[in-house]
Image 1: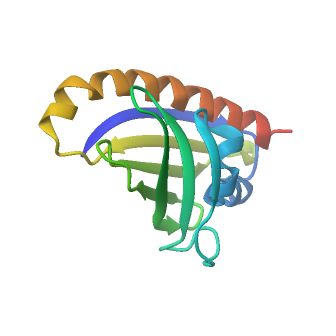
Image 2: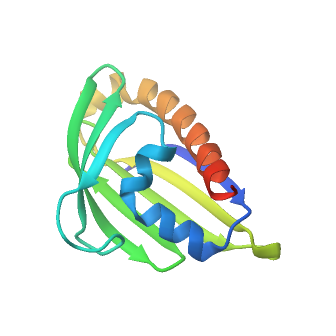
Length: 149
């Protein structure tokens, strides 16, 4: 697995409120750039392992693409991990949460690629890293703005 972007931010909101908002992936399009639409794909509750979502996302060099995102792990107020069925990137998102002083929350969002395609890794991943880092930075700033209102 290769890390493609990491962004961290302190949010003036309770860890519980931040975690609950983030694990409801239907909120993802509100805060993460490039997400065109996202809807529940099954009836499991948000944050449940195995919960799936249909996502329409804009990807550099590829354009609009539909994918299925699955919740792989959701540890209450600690971490949230999803993986998308989106070749050739095969993305994974890992968000960690930690409680800070004064009722603030530290959120760290890491995006990884599970790709094993050497051609993709050598030729395209460097450009995707640049794009995803910019999206991750903008996304966590937008998430902060939403949650601090």
